[in-house]
Amino acid sequence: MKTEQKRAEMIKEISGVNPLKCMKCGKCSASCPSYNEMDIKPHQFVSYVINEDIESLVQSRSLWKCLSCFACIERCPRDVKPGKLIDAARQIVVREKGQDYLTPDEIPELIDPDTPQQLLVSAFRRYRR
Amino acid sequence: MKYSYYPGCTLKNKAQDLDQYARASAEVLGFELEEISEWQCCGGVYPLGSDEIATKLSSVRALNDAKEKGQDLVTLCSACHHVIKRVNDDMKNVEDIRTRANNYMALDEPYNGETTVLHFLEVLRDRVGFDEVKKKVVNPLTGKKIGAYYGCLLLRPGKLLAFDNPENPKIMEDFIRAIGAEPVIYPYRNECCGGYISLKEEDMSKEMCRKIEESASGFGADMLITACPLCMYNLNKNNGGNLPVYYFTELLAEALGVKEEVKAQ
Image 1 (cartoon, each protein chain N blue to C red):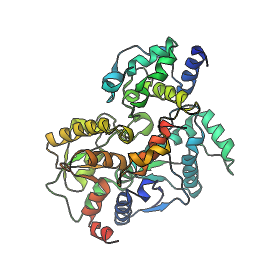
Image 2: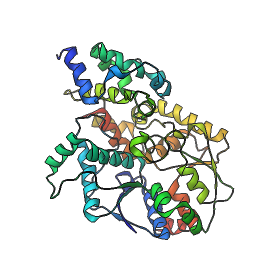
Image 3: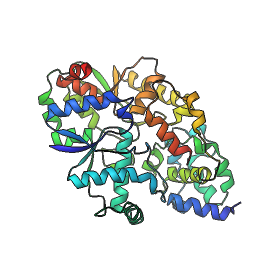
Protein backbone atom coordinates (compact mmCIF):
# COMPACT_ATOMS: atom_id res chain seq x y z
CA MET A 1 0.00 0.00 0.00
CA LYS A 2 1.48 3.28 -1.07
CA THR A 3 1.48 6.00 1.54
CA GLU A 4 -1.10 8.72 1.27
CA GLN A 5 1.62 11.32 0.87
CA LYS A 6 3.07 9.44 -2.06
CA ARG A 7 -0.32 9.04 -3.69
CA ALA A 8 -1.03 12.77 -3.27
CA GLU A 9 2.26 13.48 -5.03
CA MET A 10 1.29 11.07 -7.79
CA ILE A 11 -2.00 12.89 -8.33
CA LYS A 12 -0.21 16.23 -8.53
CA GLU A 13 2.32 14.80 -10.94
CA ILE A 14 -0.17 13.08 -13.24
CA SER A 15 -2.56 16.03 -13.29
CA GLY A 16 0.09 18.74 -13.40
CA VAL A 17 -2.22 20.67 -11.04
CA ASN A 18 -1.14 22.78 -8.08
CA PRO A 19 -4.11 22.49 -5.69
CA LEU A 20 -2.83 25.38 -3.59
CA LYS A 21 -3.80 27.78 -6.35
CA CYS A 22 -7.50 27.15 -5.68
CA MET A 23 -9.36 30.04 -4.04
CA LYS A 24 -12.52 27.98 -3.38
CA CYS A 25 -14.86 30.07 -5.49
CA GLY A 26 -16.93 27.02 -6.36
CA LYS A 27 -17.32 27.89 -10.02
CA CYS A 28 -16.26 24.36 -11.01
CA SER A 29 -19.00 22.76 -8.95
CA ALA A 30 -21.52 25.33 -10.17
CA SER A 31 -20.60 24.42 -13.77
CA CYS A 32 -20.47 20.66 -13.34
CA PRO A 33 -23.32 18.79 -15.09
CA SER A 34 -22.68 15.78 -12.82
CA TYR A 35 -22.66 17.76 -9.57
CA ASN A 36 -25.78 16.07 -8.18
CA GLU A 37 -24.33 12.62 -8.80
CA MET A 38 -21.01 13.30 -7.09
CA ASP A 39 -20.29 12.47 -3.45
CA ILE A 40 -17.08 14.53 -3.49
CA LYS A 41 -17.81 17.71 -5.44
CA PRO A 42 -15.35 19.17 -7.96
CA HIS A 43 -14.35 22.11 -5.70
CA GLN A 44 -13.64 19.68 -2.85
CA PHE A 45 -11.11 17.61 -4.78
CA VAL A 46 -8.32 20.09 -4.12
CA SER A 47 -8.83 19.84 -0.35
CA TYR A 48 -8.58 16.06 -0.37
CA VAL A 49 -5.29 16.28 -2.25
CA ILE A 50 -3.93 19.02 0.03
CA ASN A 51 -4.98 17.00 3.10
CA GLU A 52 -3.55 13.84 1.54
CA ASP A 53 -6.77 11.91 2.01
CA ILE A 54 -6.39 10.01 -1.23
CA GLU A 55 -8.17 6.90 -0.02
CA SER A 56 -11.45 8.86 0.09
CA LEU A 57 -10.82 10.12 -3.44
CA VAL A 58 -10.14 6.73 -4.94
CA GLN A 59 -13.25 5.32 -3.26
CA SER A 60 -15.37 8.22 -4.49
CA ARG A 61 -18.05 7.57 -7.07
CA SER A 62 -17.32 11.02 -8.47
CA LEU A 63 -14.44 9.49 -10.44
CA TRP A 64 -16.94 7.64 -12.58
CA LYS A 65 -19.43 10.49 -12.89
CA CYS A 66 -17.07 13.03 -14.44
CA LEU A 67 -17.90 13.44 -18.13
CA SER A 68 -14.68 15.18 -19.19
CA CYS A 69 -16.85 18.01 -20.53
CA PHE A 70 -14.17 20.54 -19.53
CA ALA A 71 -16.68 23.05 -18.15
CA CYS A 72 -14.73 23.25 -14.85
CA ILE A 73 -11.43 23.59 -16.68
CA GLU A 74 -12.81 26.30 -18.94
CA ARG A 75 -14.32 28.36 -16.16
CA CYS A 76 -11.72 28.08 -13.38
CA PRO A 77 -10.46 31.62 -12.76
CA ARG A 78 -7.25 30.25 -11.21
CA ASP A 79 -6.47 27.69 -13.89
CA VAL A 80 -6.51 24.86 -11.34
CA LYS A 81 -8.17 22.42 -13.76
CA PRO A 82 -10.34 20.34 -11.39
CA GLY A 83 -11.18 17.91 -14.20
CA LYS A 84 -7.51 16.99 -14.49
CA LEU A 85 -7.33 16.27 -10.75
CA ILE A 86 -10.36 13.99 -11.03
CA ASP A 87 -8.78 12.23 -13.99
CA ALA A 88 -5.51 11.76 -12.10
CA ALA A 89 -7.40 10.15 -9.21
CA ARG A 90 -9.14 7.91 -11.75
CA GLN A 91 -5.77 7.04 -13.26
CA ILE A 92 -4.28 5.90 -9.98
CA VAL A 93 -7.24 3.52 -9.66
CA VAL A 94 -7.29 2.07 -13.18
CA ARG A 95 -3.51 1.83 -13.44
CA GLU A 96 -3.62 -0.73 -10.63
CA LYS A 97 -4.00 -4.27 -11.89
CA GLY A 98 -7.57 -5.51 -11.83
CA GLN A 99 -9.13 -2.12 -11.08
CA ASP A 100 -10.74 -1.42 -14.46
CA TYR A 101 -14.16 0.18 -14.21
CA LEU A 102 -15.19 -1.34 -17.54
CA THR A 103 -14.24 -4.72 -18.96
CA PRO A 104 -14.84 -6.13 -22.46
CA ASP A 105 -17.09 -8.84 -20.99
CA GLU A 106 -19.62 -6.20 -20.04
CA ILE A 107 -19.90 -4.74 -23.53
CA PRO A 108 -22.47 -7.05 -25.20
CA GLU A 109 -25.00 -6.17 -22.51
CA LEU A 110 -24.40 -2.45 -22.84
CA ILE A 111 -24.61 -1.83 -26.55
CA ASP A 112 -27.42 -1.57 -29.10
CA PRO A 113 -27.40 -1.53 -32.92
CA ASP A 114 -26.78 2.23 -33.00
CA THR A 115 -23.94 2.42 -30.47
CA PRO A 116 -21.20 4.48 -32.13
CA GLN A 117 -17.62 3.21 -32.02
CA GLN A 118 -16.72 6.54 -30.45
CA LEU A 119 -18.69 5.63 -27.33
CA LEU A 120 -16.79 2.39 -26.82
CA VAL A 121 -13.32 3.77 -27.39
CA SER A 122 -14.00 6.80 -25.21
CA ALA A 123 -15.37 4.73 -22.34
CA PHE A 124 -12.50 2.26 -22.52
CA ARG A 125 -9.95 5.02 -22.50
CA ARG A 126 -11.45 6.67 -19.43
CA TYR A 127 -12.40 3.53 -17.50
CA ARG A 128 -9.55 1.12 -17.98
CA ARG A 129 -5.91 0.67 -18.90
CA MET B 1 -7.32 23.31 -52.38
CA LYS B 2 -6.36 19.93 -51.02
CA TYR B 3 -6.44 19.02 -47.34
CA SER B 4 -5.33 15.94 -45.46
CA TYR B 5 -8.42 14.39 -43.94
CA TYR B 6 -8.78 12.32 -40.79
CA PRO B 7 -12.23 10.67 -40.72
CA GLY B 8 -11.85 8.57 -37.56
CA CYS B 9 -13.40 5.26 -36.53
CA THR B 10 -17.05 6.21 -36.23
CA LEU B 11 -17.22 7.93 -39.62
CA LYS B 12 -16.28 4.61 -41.18
CA ASN B 13 -19.06 2.85 -39.35
CA LYS B 14 -22.10 4.28 -37.58
CA ALA B 15 -21.62 7.83 -38.83
CA GLN B 16 -20.88 7.17 -42.48
CA ASP B 17 -23.39 9.79 -43.53
CA LEU B 18 -21.57 12.52 -41.59
CA ASP B 19 -18.52 11.70 -43.70
CA GLN B 20 -20.21 11.21 -47.08
CA TYR B 21 -22.23 14.42 -46.96
CA ALA B 22 -19.05 16.30 -46.06
CA ARG B 23 -17.07 14.86 -48.96
CA ALA B 24 -19.82 15.63 -51.47
CA SER B 25 -20.22 19.15 -50.09
CA ALA B 26 -16.47 19.77 -50.21
CA GLU B 27 -16.48 18.91 -53.87
CA VAL B 28 -19.18 21.49 -54.58
CA LEU B 29 -17.33 24.07 -52.52
CA GLY B 30 -14.09 23.48 -54.39
CA PHE B 31 -11.84 21.74 -51.91
CA GLU B 32 -10.64 18.18 -51.65
CA LEU B 33 -10.37 15.93 -48.63
CA GLU B 34 -7.51 13.49 -49.09
CA GLU B 35 -7.87 10.75 -46.54
CA ILE B 36 -4.73 9.92 -44.61
CA SER B 37 -3.66 6.39 -45.41
CA GLU B 38 -3.61 3.92 -42.55
CA TRP B 39 -4.81 6.39 -39.95
CA GLN B 40 -5.40 4.97 -36.49
CA CYS B 41 -8.21 5.71 -34.03
CA CYS B 42 -7.58 8.85 -31.96
CA GLY B 43 -8.96 7.13 -28.84
CA GLY B 44 -12.09 9.25 -28.62
CA VAL B 45 -11.05 11.22 -25.56
CA TYR B 46 -7.94 13.29 -24.97
CA PRO B 47 -5.71 11.61 -22.37
CA LEU B 48 -5.60 14.14 -19.54
CA GLY B 49 -2.66 12.68 -17.62
CA SER B 50 0.51 14.73 -18.11
CA ASP B 51 2.53 11.52 -18.34
CA GLU B 52 0.45 9.97 -21.16
CA ILE B 53 2.47 9.37 -24.32
CA ALA B 54 1.40 6.10 -25.98
CA THR B 55 -2.25 7.18 -26.08
CA LYS B 56 -1.27 10.25 -28.11
CA LEU B 57 0.83 8.56 -30.77
CA SER B 58 -1.97 7.79 -33.20
CA SER B 59 -2.69 11.53 -33.39
CA VAL B 60 0.99 12.32 -33.84
CA ARG B 61 1.17 9.88 -36.76
CA ALA B 62 -1.77 11.57 -38.49
CA LEU B 63 -0.34 15.01 -37.81
CA ASN B 64 3.05 14.03 -39.16
CA ASP B 65 1.51 12.45 -42.25
CA ALA B 66 -0.18 15.76 -43.07
CA LYS B 67 3.06 17.63 -42.38
CA GLU B 68 4.98 15.43 -44.80
CA LYS B 69 2.43 16.22 -47.50
CA GLY B 70 2.54 19.90 -46.66
CA GLN B 71 -1.20 19.95 -46.03
CA ASP B 72 -3.48 21.21 -43.29
CA LEU B 73 -5.31 18.43 -41.46
CA VAL B 74 -9.10 18.50 -41.53
CA THR B 75 -11.27 16.62 -39.04
CA LEU B 76 -15.02 16.30 -38.86
CA CYS B 77 -15.93 14.32 -35.76
CA SER B 78 -15.89 16.56 -32.69
CA ALA B 79 -13.95 13.99 -30.69
CA CYS B 80 -11.19 13.45 -33.27
CA HIS B 81 -10.93 17.17 -33.65
CA HIS B 82 -10.59 17.69 -29.92
CA VAL B 83 -8.00 14.97 -29.44
CA ILE B 84 -5.83 15.76 -32.46
CA LYS B 85 -5.84 19.51 -31.89
CA ARG B 86 -4.82 19.06 -28.26
CA VAL B 87 -2.13 16.53 -29.05
CA ASN B 88 -0.81 18.96 -31.64
CA ASP B 89 -0.67 21.63 -28.97
CA ASP B 90 1.29 19.23 -26.75
CA MET B 91 3.76 18.54 -29.55
CA LYS B 92 4.19 22.23 -30.16
CA ASN B 93 4.32 23.52 -26.59
CA VAL B 94 5.03 20.73 -24.09
CA GLU B 95 8.68 19.86 -24.30
CA ASP B 96 8.51 16.66 -22.28
CA ILE B 97 5.77 15.13 -24.44
CA ARG B 98 7.38 16.32 -27.66
CA THR B 99 10.73 14.81 -26.74
CA ARG B 100 9.37 11.49 -25.54
CA ALA B 101 6.93 11.07 -28.44
CA ASN B 102 9.65 11.87 -30.95
CA ASN B 103 12.14 9.56 -29.26
CA TYR B 104 9.63 6.76 -29.57
CA MET B 105 8.50 7.50 -33.11
CA ALA B 106 12.00 7.98 -34.53
CA LEU B 107 10.71 9.85 -37.59
CA ASP B 108 13.08 11.00 -40.32
CA GLU B 109 12.53 14.49 -39.03
CA PRO B 110 11.03 15.18 -35.57
CA TYR B 111 7.44 16.37 -35.41
CA ASN B 112 7.11 19.64 -33.51
CA GLY B 113 3.48 20.59 -33.99
CA GLU B 114 3.90 22.11 -37.46
CA THR B 115 0.55 20.96 -38.86
CA THR B 116 -2.51 23.20 -38.74
CA VAL B 117 -5.57 21.28 -37.56
CA LEU B 118 -8.92 22.51 -38.85
CA HIS B 119 -12.42 21.34 -38.16
CA PHE B 120 -14.58 21.13 -41.30
CA LEU B 121 -16.61 24.05 -39.94
CA GLU B 122 -13.42 26.08 -39.61
CA VAL B 123 -12.65 25.33 -43.24
CA LEU B 124 -16.08 26.67 -44.16
CA ARG B 125 -15.60 29.79 -42.03
CA ASP B 126 -11.92 30.59 -42.46
CA ARG B 127 -10.92 29.14 -45.82
CA VAL B 128 -14.02 28.98 -47.99
CA GLY B 129 -15.93 31.72 -46.16
CA PHE B 130 -19.61 31.53 -45.22
CA ASP B 131 -20.39 34.15 -47.88
CA GLU B 132 -18.99 31.81 -50.53
CA VAL B 133 -20.93 28.89 -49.07
CA LYS B 134 -24.06 31.00 -49.32
CA LYS B 135 -23.38 31.72 -52.99
CA LYS B 136 -23.20 27.99 -53.75
CA VAL B 137 -26.51 27.22 -52.04
CA VAL B 138 -29.11 26.10 -54.58
CA ASN B 139 -31.69 24.83 -52.15
CA PRO B 140 -31.85 27.26 -49.21
CA LEU B 141 -33.42 25.85 -46.07
CA THR B 142 -35.71 28.83 -45.80
CA GLY B 143 -38.02 28.93 -42.81
CA LYS B 144 -36.27 26.13 -40.90
CA LYS B 145 -35.51 27.02 -37.32
CA ILE B 146 -32.34 25.22 -36.35
CA GLY B 147 -30.67 24.94 -32.97
CA ALA B 148 -26.91 24.47 -33.10
CA TYR B 149 -25.80 21.88 -30.59
CA TYR B 150 -22.12 22.44 -29.88
CA GLY B 151 -21.68 20.18 -26.89
CA CYS B 152 -18.29 20.14 -25.16
CA LEU B 153 -15.58 18.87 -27.42
CA LEU B 154 -15.61 21.50 -30.14
CA LEU B 155 -15.36 24.39 -27.74
CA ARG B 156 -13.46 23.54 -24.58
CA PRO B 157 -10.82 24.29 -23.45
CA GLY B 158 -11.33 27.46 -25.48
CA LYS B 159 -7.72 28.62 -25.39
CA LEU B 160 -6.37 25.36 -26.77
CA LEU B 161 -9.03 24.64 -29.35
CA ALA B 162 -9.32 28.27 -30.49
CA PHE B 163 -12.44 27.20 -32.36
CA ASP B 164 -14.84 29.88 -31.21
CA ASN B 165 -15.86 31.74 -28.06
CA PRO B 166 -16.51 28.77 -25.72
CA GLU B 167 -19.31 30.51 -23.82
CA ASN B 168 -20.99 32.34 -26.65
CA PRO B 169 -20.06 30.65 -29.92
CA LYS B 170 -21.48 31.64 -33.27
CA ILE B 171 -19.79 29.53 -35.94
CA MET B 172 -22.69 27.06 -36.23
CA GLU B 173 -25.24 29.87 -36.20
CA ASP B 174 -23.34 31.55 -39.04
CA PHE B 175 -23.33 28.22 -40.82
CA ILE B 176 -27.11 27.94 -40.38
CA ARG B 177 -27.57 31.41 -41.85
CA ALA B 178 -25.32 30.52 -44.78
CA ILE B 179 -27.58 27.62 -45.77
CA GLY B 180 -30.60 29.89 -45.63
CA ALA B 181 -32.15 28.79 -42.34
CA GLU B 182 -32.74 30.64 -39.12
CA PRO B 183 -30.53 29.87 -36.09
CA VAL B 184 -32.17 29.43 -32.71
CA ILE B 185 -29.93 30.42 -29.82
CA TYR B 186 -30.77 28.53 -26.63
CA PRO B 187 -28.99 28.29 -23.27
CA TYR B 188 -28.05 24.61 -23.33
CA ARG B 189 -26.30 24.59 -26.70
CA ASN B 190 -22.85 24.16 -25.12
CA GLU B 191 -23.89 21.85 -22.28
CA CYS B 192 -22.76 18.22 -22.20
CA CYS B 193 -24.97 15.39 -23.57
CA GLY B 194 -23.37 12.96 -21.12
CA GLY B 195 -20.77 11.67 -23.57
CA TYR B 196 -19.39 8.26 -22.66
CA ILE B 197 -21.46 8.10 -19.44
CA SER B 198 -24.34 6.76 -21.53
CA LEU B 199 -22.62 3.41 -21.82
CA LYS B 200 -22.87 2.52 -18.14
CA GLU B 201 -25.28 5.13 -16.84
CA GLU B 202 -27.89 5.84 -19.40
CA ASP B 203 -30.12 7.72 -16.98
CA MET B 204 -27.57 10.45 -16.43
CA SER B 205 -27.27 11.07 -20.14
CA LYS B 206 -31.06 10.93 -20.52
CA GLU B 207 -31.53 13.72 -18.04
CA MET B 208 -28.90 15.89 -19.72
CA CYS B 209 -30.33 15.33 -23.18
CA ARG B 210 -33.83 16.07 -21.91
CA LYS B 211 -32.65 19.46 -20.65
CA ILE B 212 -30.90 20.24 -23.93
CA GLU B 213 -33.95 19.36 -25.97
CA GLU B 214 -36.38 21.19 -23.72
CA SER B 215 -34.17 24.24 -23.88
CA ALA B 216 -33.94 24.12 -27.68
CA SER B 217 -37.65 23.40 -28.19
CA GLY B 218 -38.58 26.08 -25.69
CA PHE B 219 -36.69 28.65 -27.72
CA GLY B 220 -38.45 27.53 -30.89
CA ALA B 221 -36.05 25.12 -32.60
CA ASP B 222 -37.56 22.58 -35.04
CA MET B 223 -34.37 20.56 -35.18
CA LEU B 224 -30.82 20.35 -33.87
CA ILE B 225 -27.55 20.01 -35.73
CA THR B 226 -24.38 18.44 -34.41
CA ALA B 227 -20.90 17.47 -35.57
CA CYS B 228 -20.50 14.65 -33.07
CA PRO B 229 -21.65 11.03 -33.55
CA LEU B 230 -21.85 10.48 -29.79
CA CYS B 231 -23.97 13.59 -29.20
CA MET B 232 -26.15 12.38 -32.07
CA TYR B 233 -26.54 8.96 -30.48
CA ASN B 234 -27.28 10.28 -27.01
CA LEU B 235 -29.73 12.92 -28.20
CA ASN B 236 -31.55 10.53 -30.53
CA LYS B 237 -31.76 7.80 -27.95
CA ASN B 238 -33.23 10.04 -25.35
CA ASN B 239 -35.70 12.35 -27.00
CA GLY B 240 -38.31 9.97 -28.31
CA GLY B 241 -38.05 11.56 -31.75
CA ASN B 242 -39.56 14.86 -30.62
CA LEU B 243 -36.76 16.98 -31.92
CA PRO B 244 -34.92 15.60 -34.94
CA VAL B 245 -31.12 15.76 -34.85
CA TYR B 246 -29.06 16.04 -38.04
CA TYR B 247 -25.40 16.10 -38.82
CA PHE B 248 -24.61 19.61 -40.03
CA THR B 249 -23.10 18.09 -43.17
CA GLU B 250 -26.44 16.55 -44.15
CA LEU B 251 -28.09 19.98 -44.17
CA LEU B 252 -25.10 21.43 -46.00
CA ALA B 253 -25.38 18.76 -48.69
CA GLU B 254 -29.10 19.40 -48.92
CA ALA B 255 -28.58 23.14 -49.35
CA LEU B 256 -25.87 22.57 -51.95
CA GLY B 257 -28.12 20.20 -53.85
CA VAL B 258 -26.05 17.03 -53.47
CA LYS B 259 -27.94 15.22 -50.74
CA GLU B 260 -29.90 12.92 -53.03
CA GLU B 261 -26.76 12.03 -54.93
CA VAL B 262 -25.10 10.91 -51.68
CA LYS B 263 -28.15 8.96 -50.58
CA ALA B 264 -28.21 7.10 -53.90
CA GLN B 265 -24.63 5.90 -53.41
